[in-house]
Picture 1: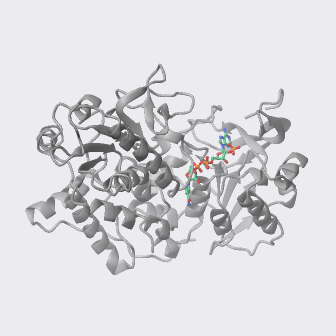
Picture 2: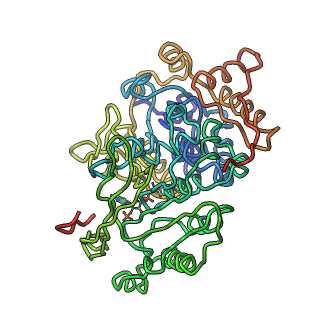
Picture 3: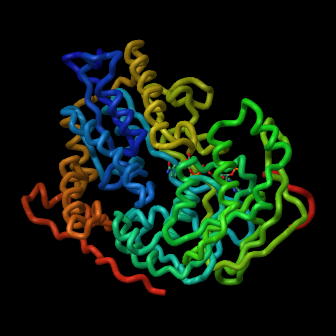
Length: 494
Ligand code: NAP
């Protein structure tokens, strides 16, 4: 292959997905310490017209400090050899073959596009939602804006003890005034603010020592303006196996602190706030009940048993039913297969070694790499992707040095842009995104909101185009804050 990364031929890298892992990979490539004089061009694709992935579409609206990480990505995007191509879908507008004909390396940073299934009866009843759908809806993801969440019942159930479950519980408990200061999608603001839900019950299948909440997220549940956090002291008695683990060196400081926080909650008397967030432990859903709509949930009590080197939740014969009108399944995300690439069905990831994608024989695929959740599974916080991206970028650059990258027939930006003009004429460049960004921020400003999101693809494209044509785009409508309106049997281990 001809030399790439030299003055004559820039190293051309495509990154599919513009969330944190994709942007960290772009940033590491554009300012590589090991290859400071590298002549490189990085093109980042996204199927949405907007960048930032879960920073825009996943992080809860009441967490603006977490969203502020996008400033780091903006610096990467300011590099002269960076390009953004939004509204271009891999597998539809551009294929594996297209990219391999034009780039020396392709890094897939597509995240985990779906949710894990519980595999219990009633899971698909109306009123049973994947938390990921609710999150995408309140964050204004264009594909989810038409969903209708009925929050008129008094009790909602959230299944799972991770940070997404914490986000969902909080979003159901925020006051209108709190919501109105955020960038929550306008279509969600009134629905959430007028919700009739009084009690949000969060179900954990294991005990307080095993929750997946991070400490700040668990603490926040105890600091809600208009919701009491409720923990039954009997529910958080630490079982002997967990006690032994907590006292061992294997236990993390975060797990010990979570137990302390929950013990504190169990000692609190409710302050009579309008809503309650009830945290339950050692229970698993067996069935969602109801004919045409969720009306309740049947749960069983669990006990922990040592299995495969960990503590697993095993069902007992103690069964309980709880009435509810809506259920959010928040038991984790899951990756989906990508056109032209292998897939590990069991883990929901693309098989790889340190980021190099492996073929069925376990050998590396030339020029194909992964980063983020599709590489390691849906774990870790945003910052975890920085290290993860460094590992992948290191193998890309090692393969460059060893002459093991892809050898594209036409590695020029000009012909790539000709292809996009034909296949995805409505693609959004970084300038287009900046136009969207300024329209949204300007719409939020008079209302003290960080932005009012455009949530329809057409509106986003119009705002992006308007800058190119010198036209003043229509602003999104911003709402003014209103006053608030008033199975028994054999144990199963999971
Ligand atoms: P997660 O952290 O993996 O939590 C999933 C939860 O679901 C666990 O409590 C798990 O229990 C439970 N679960 C799994 N299968 C179950 C089943 N069949 N029945 C009942 N419970 C089940 O996933 P997540 O909440 O979706 O979050 C994904 C990642 O994003 C995490 O790394 C999270 O920290 C991160 N995130 C961070 C923030 C933030 O920093 N503010 C916000 C949102 C998300 P077991 O432990 O027993 O498996």
